[in-house]
Image (cartoon, rainbow, N blue to C red; front, side, top):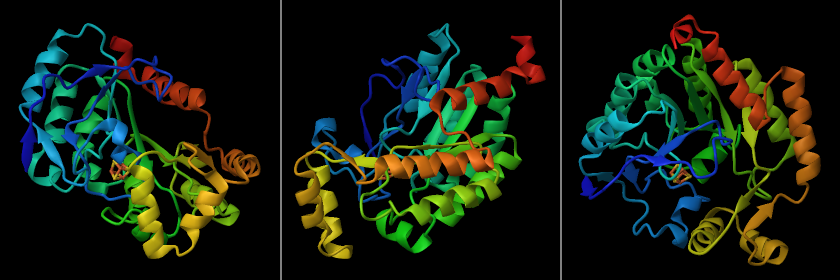
Length: 295
Ligand code: SF4
């Protein structure tokens, strides 16, 4: 693996902690090899050359430990917003596992975004952190259909494997849910698929599903996405262009109705979907934990 220089690893979140209650953010890798056709992180504005090649950050764990040891506020650290921290190289390099050990050592909480079942390797550390602070895991699932997930997220495990990973995490006491984001117009926006996913999620004990009924498209990412559409979804590029033009926010055509279908289904199965409720639920669970009463 190629390594790039990094001066810092942890960033204090600018927008307050309303996004899953996180206080800090970090990416231990640059780039991602999962090749999701819709990936926003390949947009020009992020200035990541050769996005599909994963690079590590040099001395990441040394820098992280230095930063953690100086922080007074033991907040929740978000991992994986710009690159899936459980990429195939993580098996060998264990940067994420090393970071989780440090997060536990310094009593911070963690919020992980991933599509990979490699996260199961670190259940021991997630449980350890969970006994002292807040832990939330969000696994992205955009379709209940494995064949479709292979097309739109080709280099990571299929949706059914991700659901099994969610079950395993929940069975181990980790507050885990689904990021149903993006919802791809004319591809994953079928009412029956949304209903099916919520129903299956309820059977797997999923705690929450958070969604955005659409996708974003911007420079570079749009070209990549359209080229992928040309390979597997003939004629859709033209449909997108006529429907959305150069728009950044591309909500699915029937997003209000679809969101209502989604929330009705979640209500039916007792699955949370509102961000504030999700934050309250996972932080409250921990505050009820005996070990947290020590704080
Ligand atoms: S897992 Fe996330 S960062 Fe990686 S390619 Fe897919 S959308 Fe992009």
